[in-house]
Image (cartoon, rainbow, N blue to C red; front, top):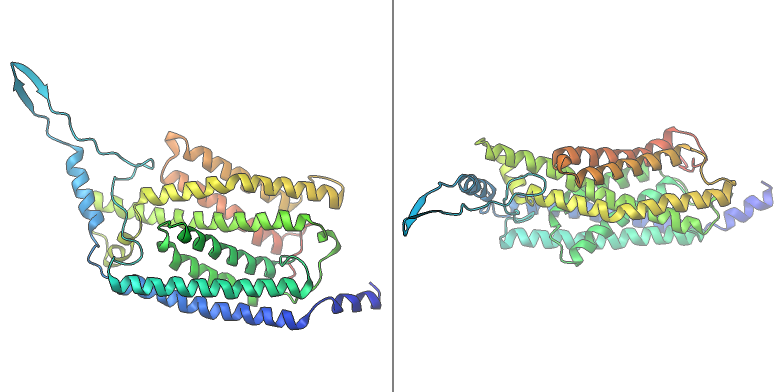
Length: 364
């Protein structure tokens, strides 16, 4: 590169906007931290008056599952009373009600929850501003390296959560776990993965950057939401199993896990979000192949990023197939879902940082 070309690249980067972007990202982390403490207050200080409803429901379900069969005489004809049928979930869990959510259903818990949501919205807007100014500083899409991918990914993940709330979906229980990992993601971004605002390498100058990478970010955010729900399902299923077998969970489990949705609801939620975004992940891989054909003259070359994208696709395809099969419901399918998300994480972090290939644009 000539000195004149280097000067042009430097001039193309608006350092003032880049600094504003950094300030906004750090500011969003501060607001997310406040939201984190508000979610903690919602979980810990809300009323526990409804704790134990899962245990009560399991006791009633267990009693109703084995009804006494009686015989009545009606005109000399024996008539068997129809036993009550307890409908079980698709995952094989007990038919128990959802918990009241993060709070205990009282005014105090709901107040902390509303404060937490408000702070989450504010932090989302501030972080979105940081992503936008990062893009304006170089006049391109803000995902040319892992730092930019990270800040965009966390913004989209929070956006997915807030969108579900706006659609009146009862997912407030997701807030604490989401914000915790978003803070970890941003902490990693501003320390280990930070890259100064700069222009793209020549191979990334394509409109496919907007199509392929944006869909990959969105798919990852939704897969993440599904993974969180899957992890919580495993904990809630163990909790319900212990109650059903007559065990006594600890005080922490009673305080936290009873407020989550029933394991069947968590399992269904995770399956639905993964199934909904899987076709878009398929499109992401196809779009990447088309872009590779334009940039490198071949559609598929088993580059490490291509290989692990395909492995991730296969893992989620196996999960969706297994989840729809009678013998692979519940915990076994959940483990497979977490394995699939682990493939996605390695495809993002492991391949970008530790493996060399044509997609080595991490900037670290």
